[in-house]
Image (tube, rainbow, N blue to C red; front, side, top):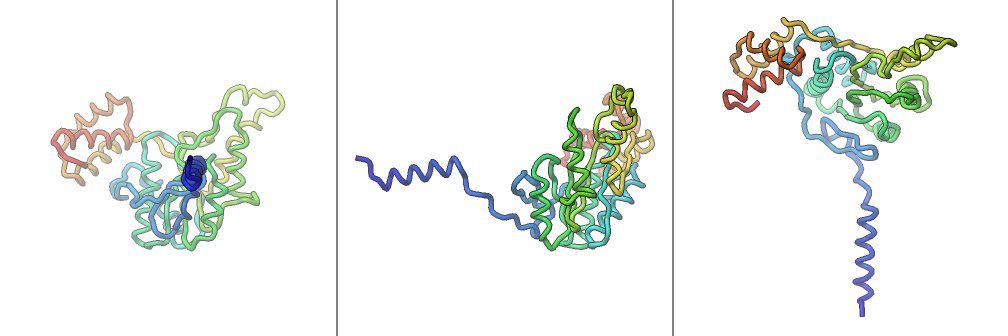
Length: 273
């Protein structure tokens, strides 16, 4: 005959597997960065980012982002940011590096939180609202599917104008390959009723960001300058002709391609970056 206590224990174990315990409350004051999972956060021990002085070819954009993040860390008025444009030009790296730099100057005053636009932002904002710290919520590579009007409108209301706006100690930083964020099609511009409505609606989200910065494909000189900075930092000699040949084989010149080339240089001589 089955022992009733053993049966109850097995039932309790099965229930725990079906409905695991709720995640422990997040300590929003102990780590430099977090990844928001939709209903709880995973702490990140260190922000992986290059030093700011190694981020080259985007000097104007870097100055604007660094200054804005420093204001947020200080508790001053700061803008939500949209960083848009060419792939691989350091948009995400610049945001991470700026927060890391601000945290060094003002320890404990700011943290980076990576999130997705469609995964519990309202819950995240509610959790951050009561924290005695400032946060940059980072949404990387944002885009919306065709026909998705609810997503952009919800994000617009969080930025400005809605009753569910983000808290005063939180600012959003979004990266995207397109300024309008939402795809534009010729059929929308050919609308016989009002040809500007669709385009204006797409740009309305971008207009809610106080700081909108474009990133463009870098010139040959900028590309070589980026490699020169990384190579000098890591003590790696290189041949500019070889670096240019690398970019030709990759079909692009960008900060990301430059870093891949530096990784190749390190690998050739058996170094670890």
